[in-house]
Image (cartoon, rainbow, N blue to C red):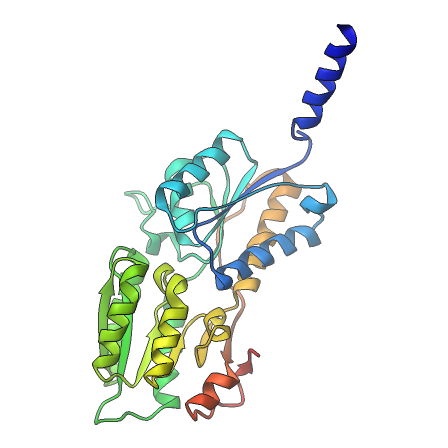
Length: 317
């Protein structure tokens, strides 16, 4: 009996996590090749700083909600129950879910807009006290959108650019409103259509293409990320070039973009998370803006539409 009890004690001890290791919960809202690069960068930065699951220096719990919001909330609550030392969230849906469910566990966001754009500030305008990581504002979208009239000619008197925006995502609506004002100032006709979910995208994209647009601008929101293959296929068949503000979407077929490199975005967030783990505290730490942005183009897509891309653009292939 004594031997059996000793063996049972050993087995239980082996099954318990090593409490002396830092624990990280990483939450992805959905499966996406572009978003995946942010996670890769985040974990690479931690490994470079000496924290990696494969090296036995970090306990990592990774979960992906596969686009289901109730599942996303359950994942966040599970990580809270596990008392992880920090939570990494990508993209904005994961960040918002984490903010709504914990005020104490440090949250390191990536592929997310600023707290103001996510509408997560309190009534005094203060950011969530446990929110860190890397965010982006909408200023870079101006540069991205302004690329289009420099690279293509309108078929009619005025350039017509198509846009989808998710009316249930505050940052998507903010981007649409910003681009609407910019288009008016540039004498461009913005043909915009709202969507509520990825299932709406094929039908609404078809309606945009039937409206005779000269180009399509892929608004950087969760719906576009999750539906981009449908969008690029339909636009290519209609001979309408796609432009965007995300380098990852250029890799997936858009012609050109000025925007954040998602791997570097994640790496920057990972560096901040590593600094938190080394210090054992977030004192003096705040969320930061994205540092690495660049102009990129897809040679195959540019050739397809006969577009000559300026020399300052970096080939993504």
